[in-house]
Image (cartoon, rainbow, N blue to C red):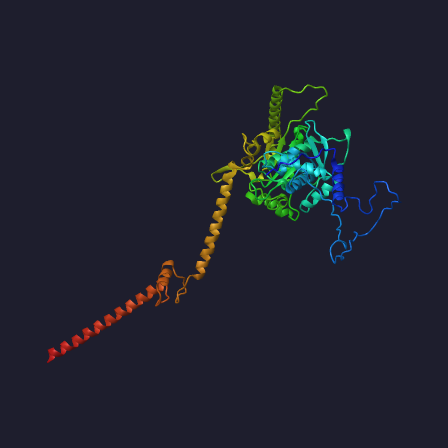
Amino acid sequence: MTTTSPAAPDPDDGDQAADHHQVDRAAKASPDGGKGPGAASVGTSAGTSTPLSVAWPVSAGQRPRSRGRGRGDNPLPPAAEVRWKSGSTEPVRKGVMVSLALFQRATGRELWHLVLPRQRNDRATRDALGDLQAAGRVREELRLPDNRKLWCLTAAGRREAAGLLPAGAKLSALRPERDGPGTAFSEHALDVVATAGLLARAGIGYLEAFSTEVEHAIPHRRSLFTDLVLRDPGAKVPVLLVEVDRENEGVGTLVEKLTSYRAWCELPAKAAAKAAFEASLRRAGTRTHGLRLWPTVYPPTGREGLPPVALVFEAGRKRTRPGTKPLTPEQKKEKEKADHLRLLRRIQAVEAASEDAWYAPPYRGDNITARNYHHALPVVATTLPLLCRFGAGAPWHRFGRDGWYTLTNALDNPDGDELLRAEQAAADQARQEREQERQKAERARRRPACTRCKAPFSDERWAERERAAWGDDGLCAGCRQAAADRKAREEAERERAAAQAAAAEAKRRGSWWRRS
């Protein structure tokens, strides 16, 4: 919540206002109003006035203190403390100093978007700038043509901001103090800060997630320095390499940058063997990135392909000559329309000339025709006025597609989902087959065998044995049938022998009766 507070001190007051303020507080905090021992006498005196000098406060005859800051009853005056006149809060002041430490220079508008992207106005940021200026932490470097103030850190502010950032964070260089025409500003650097603030306000990244002028070293080439890099692991856009263009470079230069990004993303990891790396490039799907350098530098993108590159275009401004009449509202609208059409044509020109860098080769498999984005460089483009106007819903153009999308939709690959689904189906099928083989081997190991012929039981015989609680003979179906047949034959032989014996006995008895 923004607190209504008095206006910040004038820029000309600067450090002198803070120094006078501290001196006044120290004088008022002293027991005698600044006229104690050691102070020069102001009025006339009959005798010689000799300044006194004592090491400790004067005792009033009371028992000395056994502990504390002094031995007398008059304590030492407290150190002068900075009083924040504008009533700014400490988190906002820290955010302002961190922003200036990362981006070197910015106006209140960019600092507002970076520090308080959800606020409706920049009042809290302006209060923090006023308080930090009075405390000697920031200073106004110059005024822009549109009368905005450009702020930067002082040496004391830079030292304090270094303690607020995590270890290893890259701080911008300290701006030297210059006056007059020697002080200039880079519109490109200011657009980079504005782009970071607009992305943060759109919910893409936050202050500490941005870094500027990140070097990407390429062997046998000139190093590539990225204007703005976003690292936000786990977010919808975990990584984004941003290039800001103000029409001060040719189309060929932008194409060369995209080609350099593609070359850097295809570099092998430091510990990767050459044969293993070349073999990984021929693999399908995400395995092709297993031994590359970029996964060791940036977090996973969560999508197919290499880290995305964003091109943000802004119309170059011509210096207004002295005495030129200001444009009317109608002329401003016509100029904005002309700039917008010129930037769209520039986007189309870069897209057509850099096809080798972002092209996604088609993939044709079993009843599948899609684009293989695992070997493509995602490139999206927009303009700074579109970011300012639409915020999170700003339209982005994806190279190789028609139309405009939001940033997350532009980075997604709907025409490559068939390939992704095919890879997932193949992986699931392989996993199921491995599981079935494992279960089959485990079942074969547990399958019982016949106690006579040692042949493994069939599934039906095994189920029968499992159902029998006790009394199972342990024979397979074949041995059990053979035993049953043998038993039947033996029973038949016994019955036949008994019948023959009974017939012989009957014959013997009948023949004896006839003789008698």
